[in-house]
Image 1 (cartoon, rainbow, N blue to C red):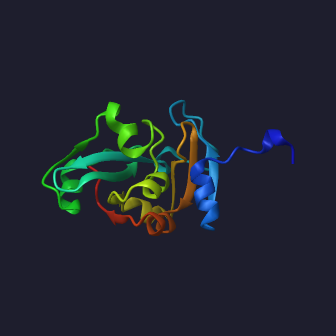
Image 2: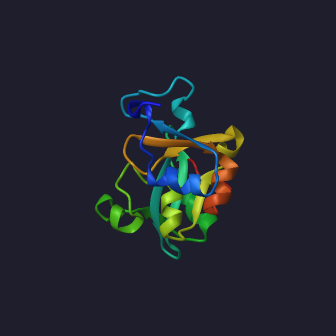
Length: 157
């Protein structure tokens, strides 16, 4: 195989490979709408980092096409209130820049509670950031949840 066709593995790919977890490594540019043919925008999930007044950092994962309900996430996570982590504090908190946050990498370093919107379970597979801008992974929703110890819940608006 020529080196040109070989996509360099991200840290997230390496973590999943080491754990023996089946996933697809993707190059996705959702901002320009350049998606692989078999992926729709609603298959892509954004990983959002928030702070809960009781729990501290917390992760909410919702479809790119939806909005996170801070009220629902607060209730399900045992907080009175949650709010987005300011962008300037994001990398310090999660280890990732805006647009590259991903549950696999975050779980490796931190034990923040992670909640995935239940629509991911209905879909069966989901696409999340691969830990670098422009890189994503497609993975079985339940497998991802099990690996990062996430809970499924209704957390979208």
